[in-house]
Length: 506
Image (cartoon, rainbow, N blue to C red; front, side):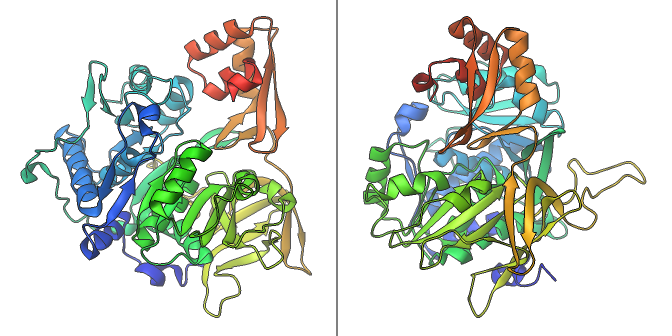
């Protein structure tokens, strides 16, 4: 059975909060979380570092505040934050309150956020006053105005708009303010913990995952990377997607060391964090690995590099890895799942396996983490302990289909061919009609339609990009005017930015 081994590796009833508490009990004074040193440029708040005891206090305080608002168990709470300590505290705080966390990509604006959240009955949004040049709290208030079910907008930071509930922790808060969760009936690890959104040809698809499924995804990378206990981890992948949670949050909780967070990418800041944290493992976008390794920033003390490929069809053409650290490629298939593969002595990427995927590759004892197959339409499908199979919200109508994948296999949309002799898969084309730019996916038909509404004569196309997979490039009679109109309409900043000169858009 494909589930065998995964549960036994960490205990099949553990939740993410259980993992955090175990580490906190082991060394409460150990450094748990560290902001990027340039945090003030990102959020206008000074960077902070929290021990496990301090993080536990912040998580319980946030959980208590959410409960005090009247939000009930299983309330759906959206989170839209930069890759900072606040994002980790918010996600774990929502879970400790017994609610369902819905992390949103940071560049989503009113149009995308409202369209996605309207499908799952969100009751609250957690955000920050500002992220870079954008007033995130004001954007969240606009989303709430579009959606009647959203009762509260909560925010970190100063100068929050009227109506936003402040979340910054009071230093002198008494212990009685902290929320102590009650035991959830049944198997808490099987409860829906997080919902993320896939973008398919049909539109937004909510992917709901239990604690057990999230831990299974992170365990796959953790075991394949051979990350040691108490290892420090530095991650540039925000926890705003399944891959971000599986590669940033879960390995940190499994290891029990320090998690350093890096927002965007700044080589000088990254180098400063490397010297300060001394990470044994780093988590980075796959296309950035070769140029970054050439700078010498991935030398000692790094033992493991986790490279996330949002465009997995690009892995086969990646340059050979020459670094001393072990490199694990993570082929990410939207919000469906990810497949880890450690590179061999030749430094070349390993082919995708056909059938059972087990980690660590080549070890005497392995854990089954996924299964691959090519379906009748020629696309790659996945199933396994990390792959969600049930719709969200759950089907309530009698006789309704409560599983969108009756056999457990979920379609990734990637066209592939198989070699039964070699037991491998080769990706030949990405999902049709979808433009993928780094963390973001767009239905190209919707992008075309919204641009045509702003300016019928404007043109926007998807072009190949070595770093992002693809990029959007636009042409209009007045680039500044159409950019302003698209921003006012509330479209993704990457779409609006396509009409700026390329250097400015980047």
